[in-house]
Amino acid sequence: MEKDCIFCNIVAGKTETEFLYQDDMLVVFRDINPHAPVHLLIVPKKHIRSINDLTEADQPILSEMLMVAKDMAAEHGIAQSGYRLFINVERGGGQVIFHLHLHLIGGFR
Ligand code: 5GP
Ligand code: ZN
Image (cartoon, rainbow, N blue to C red; front, side, top):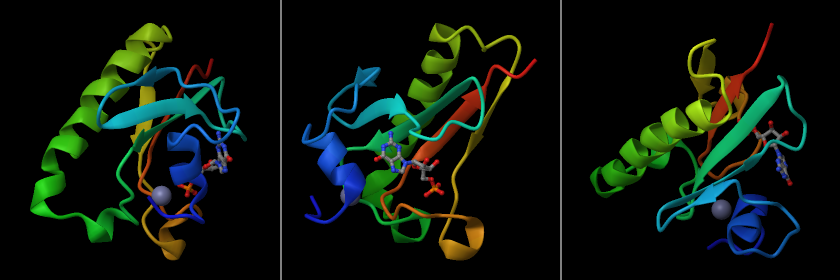
């Protein structure tokens, strides 16, 4: 855990952020500034700075992120209408929070 990392603090339960799902590897919560009717963030509990910092040992976390994304899409009723999963990487890729997270957006008409 990184003391000054917003997402580490959220993961540690130090904020009011509601978890829509959590397991031993990750948590899911709503984006504070949603870009779609459904905009969730799938966030590993482990502080991984960006995709560039992944190691082989992180592979189970990555697969869990995708499996949970699929389940959350179904739970929020957007599995069939469709959704987008994306990860911003480093500043040039639009990353603002340097704690790995997967965006799940959908529910557009
Ligand atoms: P990035 O651009 O790093 O991929 O996305 C960071 C996302 O985190 C943004 O969409 C932003 O709205 C969201 N975010 C930033 N701070 C907070 C926060 O304190 N709580 C929640 N729930 N979302 C946040
Ligand atoms: Zn962190």
